[in-house]
Length: 312
Image 1 (cartoon, helix red, strand yellow):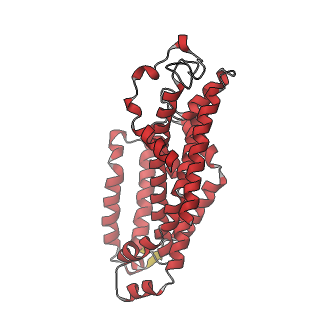
Image 2 (tube, rainbow, N blue to C red; image 1 turned 180 degrees about the horizontal axis):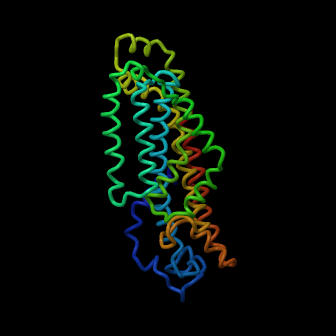
Image 3 (cartoon, rainbow, N blue to C red; image 1 turned 30 degrees about the vertical axis):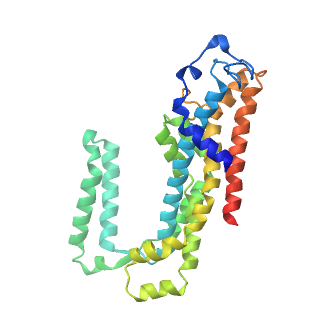
């Protein structure tokens, strides 16, 4: 806890450091540690290693914390819906299935042929049209019959697809193909990591769904959304909350790996991975490898220890 608190303070107060500490200063490149003014040495560009570590802590937290929260929230929401509705409980009239299929086909054709600036309005126009057309088609008896949405099957397919490709390889491919910013990196990490919390919450919902208080809530006539919000969700979040430290540690490691390989955040953004990458160009500068490695290991081990404490 002491290390994590110090890390949070360093990340919060990083902007208070004088600007020259991160400015390139080639005459002072590869200065060894314990040099006055540069107590942890400098990198090949003459930037202070201590300042880079502090700014790198801010980068790691700005990426890992939002990614972990978004991933946990997205996975918990999907797992809640899938666990509660399953493959047969969520049903819609055939009229809406037909109109939604037609809307998706129309949108695909419009995007294929190009619609200029009006393409931004097409999803809204098609959604309204599909809803109104569905209301009209409900007049036919055949189209009033309902069909189930196989949510559980869709989740299993999504999990299988994401599990088929190693997450690091998937993140590397996307990061190499597009320009990466803080927001896009956070969303990329979150949308490739939601399956684990979704599976945990789904399993917990299945377990809780057999308990008597939920049967009583359904017998009392409570709407499904109210049952999920007030009676199911508070009792299935514990595994997700417990796993947050491990998720944060995983995202910090991923961000460091991407920066080390040069496909993460822009080069001007200080990070531990970038400092590790600079050690390849100065093999004799051992401090470029030692200090960021200590920070990375201490943070990861502290988060894992926090996970073990939370399970007790």
